[in-house]
Structures are given as C-alpha cells and as structure tokens.
Image 1 (spheres, rainbow, N blue to C red):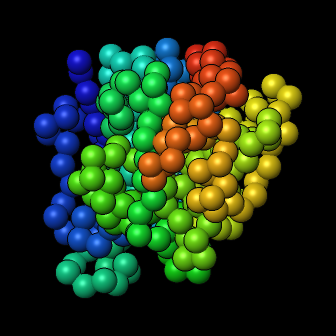
Image 2 (cartoon, protein in one colour):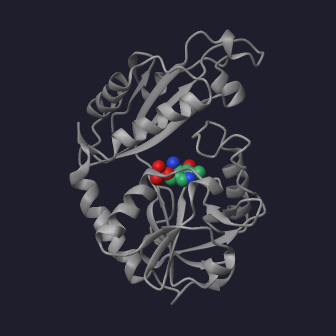
Length: 290
Ligand code: PMP
C-alpha cells in the first residue's frame, strides 16, 4: 500500500512526512481537523466536510492558507497518489510553527496535512451483533467553553471517556452533557428509535454536528421515518426500541446494550438495518469522484 502524505504543498512517503515540534498543533492542540471517507474512488460528502473545516477554522481565528477549492484538490490529489479507493482521509490544519509561548501571532503560517490511509475503529463483530456501551462520568464540554461544534485537535474529553470505556472492556461510551442529557460517543453521534421515530440529540446540547448524522437523517426521512432532533436522557435510551451510532470512521454501528440494559430485543433492529443498507448503497454512488 502506498501512502503519500501532503504537508504544506508537497507529498511525502508516510515515514518522511514531518511537522515541527514547535508547531502549536503539537504543543497546544491548537488546530482543527476533518475525518473523511472515500468509497470506491468517490469522496463522501466532501463539500460538507470542507465547509465544516472552514467553519471550525473561523471559530478559532485560524486563517487557512489555501482556498476551499485548493483544499478540495489537496484531498483528491492525496487520494489519487495513494493506491486506495476505499480510504479514510485525515485533513489537519494546525496553527503552525511558533515559539514556546501561547501567542498565535508568533505562528506566521498554519500547517496543512492530508493523509489517506485505512481505518478500522471497532471490532468487526459489532457491525453484525451490535455493540455494548456504557455511560461515563466524563461530560461533553459545554457549548459556552470550547464549542463541541469545533472539530479541534484537542480530543482530551473524548480520549478520557474512551479510556474509561476500554478499561472496563467496552469499545464505546455514551457521553452526557452537564444537565444529564445524552450527547454523543467519543467519535460518533447517537440515535435512538422509539415507536418508529428516529431521534438524535440537537446540536445545541453540545455535540459535533456529524456529516454522517446529517446523511442518516436525510436517508431516514426518504425512507419515510419521522426524524426528530430532541433532548433525551439515559432512561429514554434504555427504553428505546433501537439505538445506533454514526460517524465517518464508525459508519453506522448498532447498539444493543447500555449500562447493562438490553436495548429493544437486544439485537440490531429493523430500522437500523434499513439505514445501514441505504448508507452502503449511497456511499458508493454519491461522492465526488477522484
Ligand atoms: N462526534 C464526535 C466527537 C466526532 O469526533 C465525530 C467524528 N468526526 C462525530 C461525532 C461524527 O461526525 P462525522 O459523521 O462527521 O464523522
């Protein structure tokens, strides 16, 4: 497998791609990123991912040194230079090289990195049998701190929650906000299905507005299911008919147990399966061709 990594205008073999230890992305997590997938040589929802990247940049006063169109070309060219047709693409823009102080004015040029590689997030069996999850004490950071809408390089909230989960033998968690409403997983959005309604938490609770979440809401409406963005608690999750997670890396993962409560029948449910099927069909035809 040939992996070519774009760093600031040039492509390098994987082991030769380097950024400075004085980069504020490394020193402070000062930067933003996107995770994007390609299916059969087509990049899924690239426009939406690039729009979110530029919005994240704006929120942290980061001036991306490439135009939207140039960035699109970086993603497509990185894929062309790899021999992958199904790929996970990581696009990173950090504040760039500065000094050891916090002041971003000391970083004259943001660093841009694009990597196309493979990713596998969860064990294969969770996609057929469903996943067991737990809720954790780590709260999703409130929208009036660093907004969870910013896909920032600082993933310590998710990483803390992930450590709690894997230490206890679970692959994924449900994070709540400080009011106790269900928000999302460490790298995935969450949905429940109750009496045929497909429900997902609203963005203002403190979640990343996932691109897969938006696609799944669209597909669910097309299939005729009422879709709602509504607040819900762990009680609603425990007593739901179905539950699933969505994310670029995760795709759609059925959830069959939370905090030792079986969800619905304890097996992936029919609405989840229909959405997985639709997602599989659409991802191979919808995307931007490389
Ligand atoms: N929430 C968080 C915290 C994430 O990191 C991700 C992955 N980007 C998601 C949700 C899912 O978003 P998307 O569908 O755009 O990958």
